[in-house]
Length: 379
Image (cartoon, rainbow, N blue to C red; front, side, top):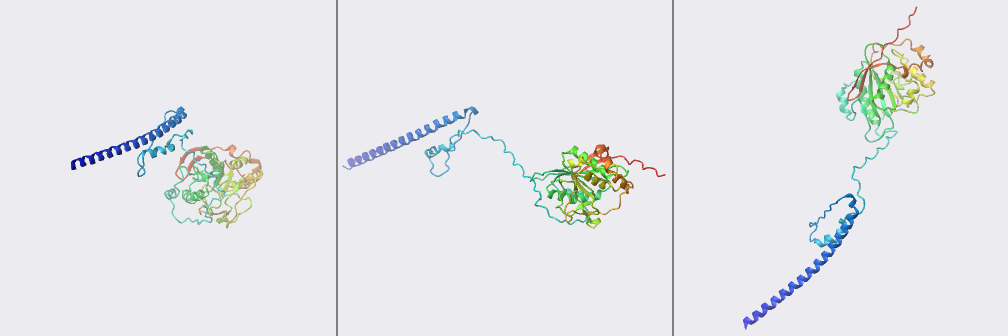
């Protein structure tokens, strides 16, 4: 009797297991056909999408079915596969984006500090100046990295035997010019030999040689011993020829006379050519700046100047250079500017370049400019 009951119990258990297996099989078939139908729909759309882009060649699409979330099923990935289908939009060009154009440099740069403390007691070396101005490139050139300057400025310095003065000039002017957001290059025009010095002719040479190096549209002409005392005295060109050094310490910070145009001045390329550049026949000290002033006024232009509180300069004290004695003919030449300015100037300039050397802080151009004509004999 007990064996019969045991057999029936086992029979019931087997039937229950078989029934459970059948139910499991039915559920699996339902899930299988559901998944199959979704896969068929996805691949049919995939083929349609590939047909749109077939003109650009084969494409490969990769789907990540790894378990990124707990209990994620294959069917759930297929249900969201619409997000992975290829787009029918044209492919974007993968070339690097063009850099955004720089804004114009402001008329009044925000980094200016105003009045400067200028002293000449400290020892200055070119190595120190170079360390202090790492963004100045070979030849003494600089371009603001964050804005687009309106002008390209060549700064011309007539030069002979003033190496110590040049160190101070570079030490003070490079930081000033960088704060002013000026795109500039510095040119030292070195007169070789020991003949009489000719400042104005060297400035003409600087104008000509600078244009061989770059397309400048503004020219600042500066003596090497004059340092501005205020960085708001902006070194660029204006609507009228500009006189920057209007208040030197040696003149008690006053303009010595109304027609004074010496020390530091600036002209645009158009203004410079309009007056035929500077005179070539002022050998020795004095007179050439007054001749330039006459050329400006005779050609219908006016001299512009900064405020006297801003146009202040300190001069490095020194003895008068040898072979730069006062020109005894300067007064008669000044009175004759109207008759000489068309034939004496940039149009009649003659010189010989001996060497051009680009240093980290400036470009040095050594030239031979001849010698003065014999002075008339006084009987």
